[in-house]
Figure 1: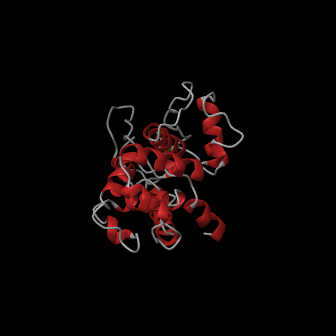
Figure 2 (figure 1 turned 120 degrees about the horizontal axis):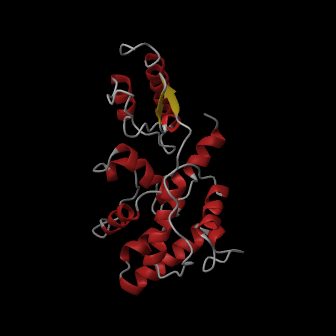
Figure 3 (figure 1 turned 180 degrees about the horizontal axis):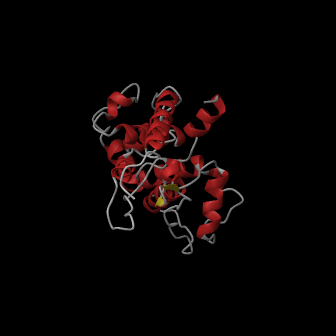
Length: 228
């Protein structure tokens, strides 16, 4: 993968669940480590670790080497109105595209979606980014337009396996296994439904292995798996 693509994944707006970030910040009240890396968040799944670390970098709570910033220290030490002010400052700094030359108090949900897409977000990640921002803005006391609603889950064109539509196949999430005309679920469809979702924040070597495994699985599904 090209360096530019890797940087784009790193710079994508925060899309970790807001509660996960908040729990992590509060967990640092005892002590803030000199570096935030995967060993500090080992209780989370691998995908969630990637989302959290990527979000911390985007929010400027850690630098590119994982070193905590003054903003993180301020957030950890704050409570009540001070926490609210710290969150507001963090959001205004990180999401300048939603505060500069943009009326967040009157905008529509579609306008906000377009802003995130312009920031390099796509697919269902747009919904996750908006969910994080709206939750954080609420806790930060930032007024947002009442017209902003959460976008629905992204739908993909899917792929057809022996005439059966598998939703979300091209982004690595097969979802609920569809039924055949006979009302039965084939073993290939079951395999696809269990295949892990692709995470753009994964390291490049993990992404390569994911695509290789998915290609192999797709090739196998082309073989007859049930009588006509």
